[in-house]
Image (cartoon, rainbow, N blue to C red; front, side, top):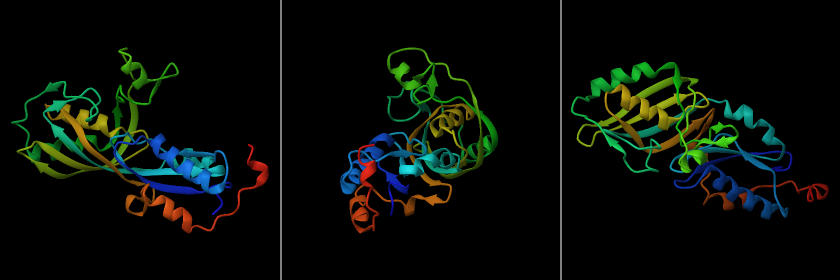
Length: 241
């Protein structure tokens, strides 16, 4: 492998770690293994800290492919808690409102999900990495400032109800969607469309393009995998760059 010329490494990001944190962990291991101060690396598509799954990392000249990789179709599996909302639309924040759920049935959910297939407009979460005048929305929100984001047009190729627990009022879905889709915001919108509320309790990215999560490395597996690779030595002329 030639990490300087560029390689793509597919990681199964763990729960509770930011995408940058996972990237930094891998970059540190790679740089130390190659004997360089800092190997150029980047990731193709952020995952929230509370989400797990496919995170594509690029090294060296392969970082030029990040835009291309980010554009690939993505697949997620998610669990939603119905009847309540949180400010971040996931479990990062406490519940801020509750709503009725007695009217919600499997049939209603399946009928409601149909309206989200195809081209839709979605307002990104205020707690997101979207930029407003050069500032990240979540940074402004955490400082107590009002955040107003404009709707974005995106595409949902497939959305499928995979489970519904009428006692716990929890539902699970599989979603195949375009770049830029916030599953947290989709949960918010599904809750509203059901005449209730909803937030994410679990999210896993299972596919990006042809890369499937079952073929990704965990961070615990990465060191052993790295030791097993035949690596082209890093050029001396690039060690100081």
